[in-house]
Amino acid sequence: MEKRERFNSFAEFYPYYLGEHSNSTCRRLHFVGTSLVILIFVLALVATVWWWLIALPVAGYGFAWIGHFFFEKNRPATFQHPFYSLLGDFVMYRDMLRGKVAF
Image 1 (spheres, rainbow, N blue to C red):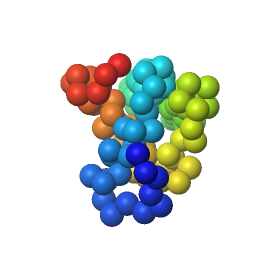
Image 2 (cartoon, helix red, strand yellow; image 1 turned 135 degrees about the vertical axis):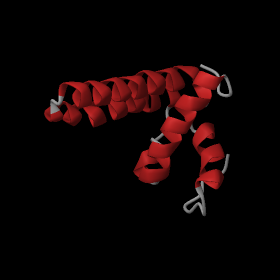
Image 3 (cartoon, rainbow, N blue to C red; image 1 turned 90 degrees about the vertical axis):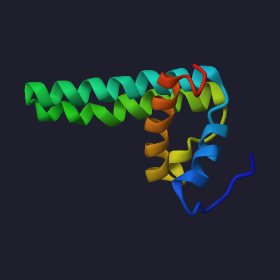
């Protein structure tokens, strides 16, 4: 898919985002990282241990970037589109749970 500098909406961005995640190992690593982000966030809220929130970017981006650099062999979309990319990760996570995007 053609790389674009600007997207007018998330609906325009998401197909590009999915194209940047064609490798199944990369998608699975994203899924693990996003699952850890959700788990850490919930545990921090329940336990009211706010400093655990520092681990969120490490868990989320760590797994995702390993997937991109070693398996997908591309630059993460977050470098050019940080907000759409974060949203894309959660939408892809949901779509994987629903069976719309393959594991």
